[in-house]
Length: 334
Ligand SMILES: NC(=O)c1ccc[n+]([C@@H]2O[C@H](COP(=O)([O-])OP(=O)(O)OC[C@H]3O[C@@H](n4cnc5c(N)ncnc54)[C@H](O)[C@@H]3O)[C@@H](O)[C@H]2O)c1
Image (cartoon, rainbow, N blue to C red; front, side, top):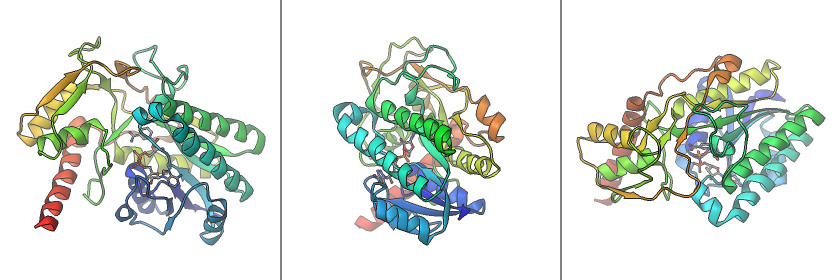
């Protein structure tokens, strides 16, 4: 088994495709397994593609053997917080039951190095301004619960079977590949930056702002936006750490800086030269006023550091991607 042959579940998705590209650039061979429920076939460009579900045990086993896989990055999941509160069953099935099925096969096949996509949603309402990894984990939505459940399984599998995992708790991934080859393409889109850009470019209607009386500088929610390229790089560093016999660890992947919704609107308006139409609403239930990482541990353990996560860089890379995609659509519909 070769640990540089990496099974990348969910590698046709937004973060997964950027991770596959980063892995390939770093000398790994990403083998993408994805059922394309929310991913895109065109986003798989840096290694073999296997169409299928992580719960298809025969397929996963066959894939591991065929490609001599020695490590895994598990990103496949359902990832809409709002939907998870409407349909928790779907989330527990896809994110927990199917993840456990995947872990079973990894264990059976002696693939004992895993990087798992966890989330800041595992923390719940922050009790401190910056959230460290030792912050209590009390998720306030089913999505966060499912990520927490898999983290716990990984912890106990390490204790019992020596199954080493790095759980990366991403904050708000945003932006697009700096070469413009891939970017965010969700349907429906729920993330703030693509919605704001889409709104400025006239693709989406007015931008809905949920919560304008939070105890923040301008009343809107504050989030920690991390460039998807920096998120992808963290996976490369995490795999290298595991291959070098590093221990299991849970790590925040964020910048340590918060940006408000209103500030994003300003940055997008400046970048596009267009005034955004916004509609304000009550805050959504369970939406914390601020979510900002303390990212020091990832820097210390992995030597990782965000390199391109200035909000201007995030928005301009996303802008380039969305503008290019839009002009392609216009050409195709002519
Ligand atoms: N985007 C963020 O800001 C963010 C923040 C924290 C955590 N995460 C986590 O990161 C991961 C990737 O998120 P994303 O934003 O790229 O989402 P995404 O929807 O773009 O990617 C998920 C991918 O997984 C695939 N998939 C889903 N269920 C599958 C299954 N059962 N079998 C095979 N493939 C399956 C989808 O087709 C898709 O390609 C997810 O686990 C998500 O929970 C994302």
